[in-house]
Amino acid sequence: MEYAALGGLTEKLLQFGLTRQEASIYLCLLRNRELSGYEVSKLTGISRSNVYSALAGLVDEGAAYLLEGETNKYTAVPVGDFCQNRIRELERLREELIGQIPKTEPDTEGYITVSSHRHIMDKLYNMLEHVEHRVYLSIPVQYVGLVGGQLRRLTAEGKKVVLLLSEPAEENLEGCVIYVTGKEDRQLRLIVDSAYVLTGELTGSAADNCLYCGQKNFVNVFKDSLRNEIKLIELTGGISLNGKKGICDEGTD
Image 1: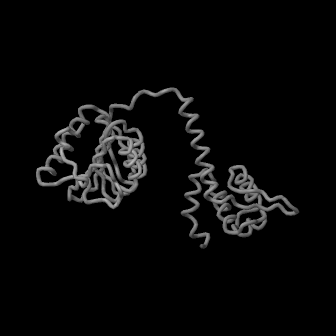
Image 2: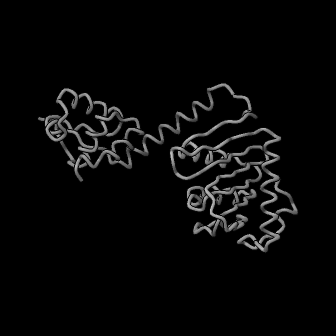
Image 3: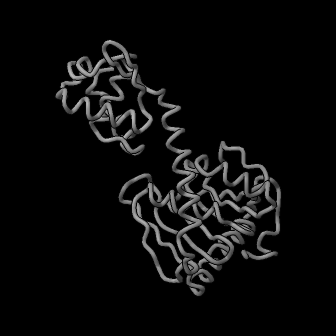
């Protein structure tokens, strides 16, 4: 693989705390096992002064080891180990922050716009992480696999999970109640614990937008709309894939 083709990898390494030069040099070390600062400079075209500074940074960040000898050389920490070490450190810092930052007020009851596919998925993951009793989710079927693990966890914990999908999903969703709408839909609709709603377009684009709301009246109107859709599916002969009926009898609560 040519260095020009490694731009995507460089961008990913930036997310793990490396600078752009450190990321380029780290990739160089991964390809060449053991290198001196002079050799790294020749291979990357980065000045020797900047190379030595970046190599020191890589050692400090836990991405490279220094091999001391007549000529000091450097070798890369395997990428899986480096990434896992950073994740472990971030998890530790996360727990410290949660414990030390003053408790915040409950979620706002106002309307919040969540923009871009990545941020919408983050919000979706976080909402599913905090389900206490039940969740109703309508989502484009191609994204079901991304949340399948969380949905299975919720059902294993005895929490109610109801899905509305345009077609059967390939993902194993045992324990979920699934309604097949037969309609191609790019909309995301999520209700958690009858208290919070996330709704909007989900296409995979940075232009995606969703509305997040905990306003009681809005949530109730949204629940009624979803309840009516489920009733219509049942009245027209639709059933959940696991054979469970009576969702509307017990209410979209």
